[in-house]
Image (tube, rainbow over all chains, first blue to last red; front, side, top):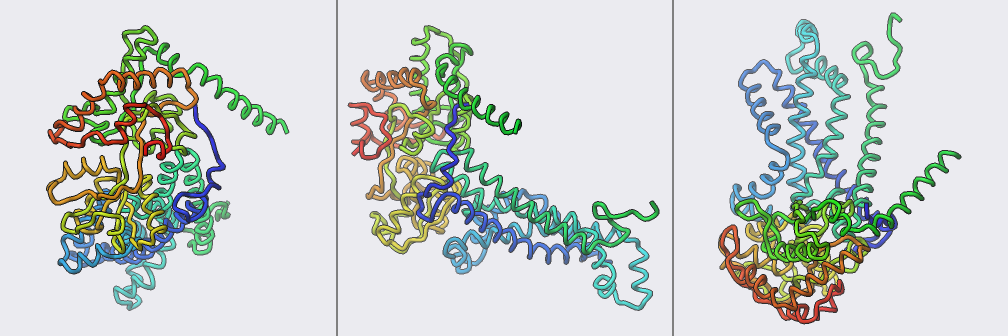
Length: 252
Length: 300
C-alpha cells in the first residue's frame, strides 16, 4: 500500500471557504439529520395510518393501502429520488412545475429528498404497524367491542397503544435506516454527509481520511440514537410481552 | 504497557515498510507478474470510455498503449499482458495506492494538491473551465451569470472555482450541485439551471451527444485552465521516467497529431459523432515543450 496518510487534512481549510474540512463534514451531518428527521416524522404518521388501514375490515380501503405499500417498497430508493426530482415537475401543470424547479437551493433538492425518503420509509413503518396489530391476540379487539367501543375507539385506546409499544425495537431499526438512506439524497444534489465526504476526497485526494471520518460520524450518530431508543424501549415496554435485556424472568 | 509497545512497534514497522515497497516499484511488479493494469473510465468521452463492444477505448487509452510499449522495450519483455480495470473518481486513488492499477488513463486534472497523493506524467490535454447554456438564454461571459441559477458537478474543481468567483465578483448566482455530468446537463435541459459550469471539452462532448446539439452554446469566457494527466504512483521515480519518456517520444515524433485527430477531429464510437475540437494553443505549447506541471500558470 503506497498511500500518503494525512489526518491533518481534517483541520485544513476546505476550498469553498466555509471553514476546515471537519466542520464541512459536520455541516453535512446537520443536513443528513434535517433530511432524516423531517422524513421520519412524515413516515411515522403516514405509516401508522396506512398500516392500521391495512388491517381495517373495509376491503377496498385495505386493498388501496396494499397498493400504496407495494408501489413504494418495490421501486429502488435511488430510482424514486430521480422520479421525484426530475420527472414529477414535468408531469405537473407548467406553472407549478416551473415554480418547483425555480425553488432556491438547497430547498429545490431538499423538499423532493424529504418527500421521497418519507414515503419510502412510511411503507416500511406501515408493514411494522400491520405486523404489530396482527400479533395481538384477537381477543383484545373483541374485548374492545364488547365494552361498547366503536371500531376507531378500539384501535385508538386498545390496539394501537399496545402495537406501538411492541414494535418499538424494529422501529428503531427503521429510524437508523432512514438516517443512512438519506445519503441517497446526494444524487439529487443535497450536500449531506456522504456527498461532502465525496467532495472532500475529490478536492484533496485524501480518500481514506474523508470516508473514515464520515463512517465514524455515522457510527457515533447511530449509536447515540440506539442508546436513546433503548431508554425509551425500557420505559414503555409491556411487562410479559417483550422483555428488555436483563429483566428478571417470572418463575425462575 | 505491553499493548502500547506492541501498537508502537506495529506502527513503526508499517511506516518502515512503505518506502521499502516504493523501491521495488511498479517496474519490478510488472516484471514479476508479466502484466500491467490500466485503470480506465466508463464514460469520459473521448478520453477513456466503453465503446459499443464494451471495450475501453479513447484518446488517453491510445496514449497508455504507447506507454505500455515503452515499458515492454525497457524491460525487454515483448509479452506483457494488459489488464483493464474500470475506475471511478471515488476509487481511483485507493486502487492506485494499493497497487491494483499501474496507470490511470482518463481525464484527471493534475494539480498541486493532488500531487501530495499521486504523480502525473506529461500533460495530455489542457482544458478550460467554461459554461454551457441554452442559446436562447444569450449567456456568454462570466458577468452574464449575475443572479442566475448555475449548476456544476459535485466534488469537482469546477464547482469550487465557480463558488469562489461567485463571492469574488459578487455575482449573486445560486449554485446547485449535481451528482454527475448527465444530471447537471439534464438540469439545464429541463430549465432547473441556466448554465452548467464544467471543463469545456466535456461540455463539447455532452452537447454533441445531446438530443439537439444546436440549442446550446459554450461561453466565451474561460474561468480557469486545467491540465489533464495520466496518474502514476507517487515516488516511483524509475517508472515515471519510462512513462514520461514514452509521452515525450509521442509528442516529439509527431505521433500525437494522428492520435489527436483520431479522437477530436473525426467521428468517434459509439455514435459516430465528431467532436470537432482543434488542438488549443495551450496544448500546442505542451506538445512543443512537454511539461508535467500541476500549476495552471505554466500553461498560460
